[in-house]
Image 1 (spheres, rainbow, N blue to C red):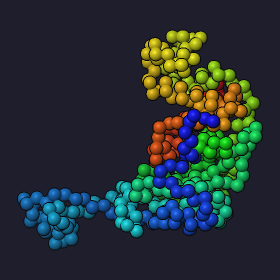
Image 2: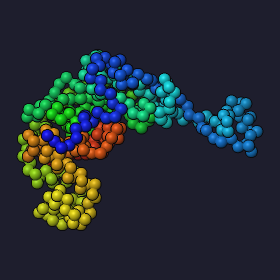
Image 3: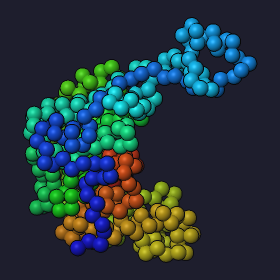
Length: 354
């Protein structure tokens, strides 16, 4: 049994609701408290009332150009907008005039269109903060297998109502043996699709069947790629060099090799103090290297694939899914769209190059 804490799939985080018992979109929305709508409104500036400007301010108040409340004067801000929840009138974020709202129901319409109405195998759904950001995940009916290692395919729909990001639709395979390991099995950014909040965003979401087709094609590619990785022998030394090539900059990697070409990388993983100091490697990076290699040795599901390129690759995805100290929406962002996503995508390319 692994010594690492199992913390669930990347979207099993605070704020998420388990909706596996839901059958319909309506049931998921109610249980995850996503049954609210969002609208856009003009912004108003709040400024202190000054006695020396009283006459002109009062004139503008009488003309309807401003209004007073206590010791403050309020004026409209032309061409500036905010989004807000219509059920509780809570502002969610500042947006531009051309910003197009994508309602929460659109997420479920997407799944109904892509998988079939009421046929989605719902997993989790939820929102952050006051509802600024939402996500829904569902399992697809088709699985892939790597040397007997079952991998289930998921679609994740994420959206922001605060203008910080667009609509993100991610296809990701997850190993059943350790349902918490993010295996972003696709070699490039086509593993997820992004739509900006422009006038055409809602019409683009209607192309659900096409998006699902891309996902199914990616699943076939992922299965072939994973099986090829599992056939490539990779000893511990090669795995250390591979992990180091992912986390270290080119300059850091070269410094380690120049100090001790034969065993410098190995000494880095044993946390040799003198080498770390001479090579100017941060403690944070050294700990990442150490934890990733330990996951390679005894992480969930690693026993069968240790000594292969597939096992080496899973050490990277396993680190970010199980060990990296990120919580809540920061963890979700990192795994799906941020640094962790970039690293796991680079990990595939680096493995082929290596």
